[in-house]
Amino acid sequence: MADDPIWAKPLKFSISLALYAITLAWMLSMVQRPVLRRIGWWAGTVGAAASLLEIVVISIQVVRGVGSHFNVSTPTNQLFYQLMAGGVTLMYCATLVIGAFLAMFSRIEDRALAWSLRLGLIIALVGLSVGFLMVIPTAAQLADPTSSTYGSHSVGGDDATGGIFFLGWNTAHGDLRVSHFIGMHALQVLPILAITLPRALSEADRLRIVVAAGATYAAVTAIALWQALRGQSVIHPDAITVAAVGVTIVLAAMSFMTIAAQRRHQHR
Image (tube, rainbow, N blue to C red):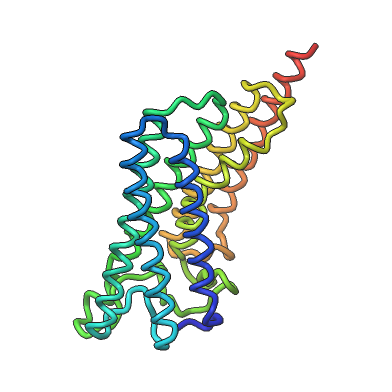
C-alpha cells in the first residue's frame, strides 16, 4: 500500500471513470442511426459496468489492506488484478466503438465541436493505451519467480518511492500515469473548450483554435510519456524535457497569435 490516504485511490478512479461514463453517454446521444446507437448503448453499458467493477475491486482491496494493481501475491489478488485488467480493456473498446460511430456516422454541424471530439478521441485512446505498458513486467520481476507484483506504474524505480499527494505520481522516477491521465481526459478537455469558446468568434476561428489546442495537448501527452519512459520524474525534468516543453509553448503561442492576426485582418 502507498502512503496516500486510503480514500484517495477509490475517489480518483470514481471521479475519472464517472467523467468518462458521462462523456460517452453524451457522445452516444449524437449518433443518429438507431441501429448504431443501440450497438453503442450496449458497448457503453458494458464499459460502464466494467468501470464500476474496477472501482468495487479497488475498494475491496483497500478494505483488505493490500494493493490492487499489479498484485499477484495470492490467487485472490491475481483474480482481482485480472478483473481490473479486463475492465480497462472493455472501457477502451467501448470508447473506440462509440467514438468510431460518432466520427463516421454522425453529422455535427459545429465543425469546431466535431473536430474537438475527433482529436479528443484519438488522444484519449493513446492515453488509455499507456495503461497497457503498465502491465508489462519489469526486468526485476521477470528475474524473480517469487515476485508478488507483475507490472508497474513507474520506470526506473519502485512504485512505492514517494508520490505527489492525492495523484500519487512518483516524485523520484518516471511514472506512466502522468501521460495516461493527461491523454485519456482529452476527451473531456477539448470538447469543453469547443463548447465554451465565445460565439462571437467565427466558426473558422473556433475550428482553428480547437485544432491548435488539440495539437498542443497531444504534444504535452507525448512529452509526458517520453519523460516517463526515460525514468524521469514529472517534477524533476532535465534540460531536454524543459526544452521540449519550451518548444511546445512557443509553437502553441505562435499558432494562437497567427489565429488572432488572421481574425484582425478579416475585420479590417
